[in-house]
Amino acid sequence: MRIGDSLPEWHVEATPTFVISTALATRDFQDVHHDRDLAVQRGSKDIFINILTTTGLVQRYVTDWAGPEALVRQVNIKLGAPCFAYDTLKFFGQVVGREQQDLTIEVVGRTAHGDHVTGTVKIEVPA
Amino acid sequence: MIDIEKEAARIAEQGESAPRLARDPVNQPMINNWLEAIGDEHPGYTEVAPPAMVQVWTMAGLHGQRTLDDPLGAMMTILDEAGYTSVVATNSDQTYHRYLKVGEHLSVTTSLEDVTGPKKTGLGEGWFVTTRSTWWVGDEAVAEMRFRVLKFKPARKPEPKPETPRAQAIRPSVNRDTEYFWEGTRLGELRIQRCGGCGLLRHPPGPMCPECGATKPKYLVSEGYGVVYSYVVHHHPQVPGRQTPFVIALVELDEGVRMLGELDGEPSIGRRVEVVFTKVDDELTMPSWRPRADR
Image 1 (tube, one colour):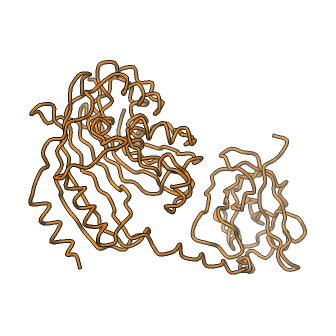
Image 2 (cartoon, chains in turn cyan, brown):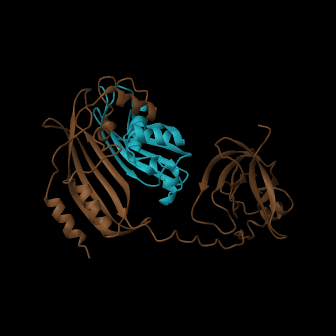
């Protein structure tokens, strides 16, 4: 795990079931995450993924790559285009910093509409 | 008229809200629901919770009400009254001081860090509201978060999309160096410049051979087959005479040179393609690529 290493590209199919089950599992009951009629009324194209889920996906992307021994210390994310139901969310990542056991990884998650999330994750890996 | 900045300063001065206790202690069933939904098969979350779940524990829930001293709630009310009725989260920066164990009962405190605006955004005019939350187990701070939302006035109506003018496709500029190429496409030939001196194949065309310096180029006619060497999917800006998105592929021809062109089909590097000629008018025929069916 060195500076410049890339994480394997990862695709998440944001089916309606995925959008809704993750919203409820993160205890986010905002209607735009589970009720398409209301989401459309509020000007959205469809229901979309909530921010707590995006944080969870970013964490999973990094730990899937780094392995279960890695400890997650920080997840910083900035949201852009919403990730709507039926979108494919594609994750890309790269190691941008390393100090002994502390790694910084830059992550971006994209849909066809643009960058849904850009962020950095800090992890600590075993010596 | 509400003075938003003054109200923000008043709320910020109140400092941290009183600790609000999570509905449930950190527990395995909720962890399992989360892992199942996210699809995370990390084997380590049996006695500790995934760090990214920290905010989940203190979510207000289905019938949640904000507490009176919650600074984000207070700021939202003020912005609602000022006409900024919609909200979208823009940033979440979470720091985890340690992993949380099953059985630990979290509480959360929140203070208002910053309110800036009004800003013009893609969604409409709005204010960015930044709060800072700390999660506690007893009096130990276990995690922190900076959270930013945009509270905005939804733009009146979605702006009517300007009708894309029916424009002519951009035409290549033809000159003495490239004339043979466009003459070829009119005849259904994909021509590659070939040095009249040393025979080097080159593309794009130029007046002089980079190898031997000869200035009398000839050409040969390509078989018209190659592989995708690289490509871009063009989404923006609009291009006259083109529907976005479209794919521009750099194709490595079997003869060895690389050539740009539109690719009609799903792009992937290494894919076999063949040339197609599309007649635009008597003067111009454009070459492009399509996947080869037989490979």
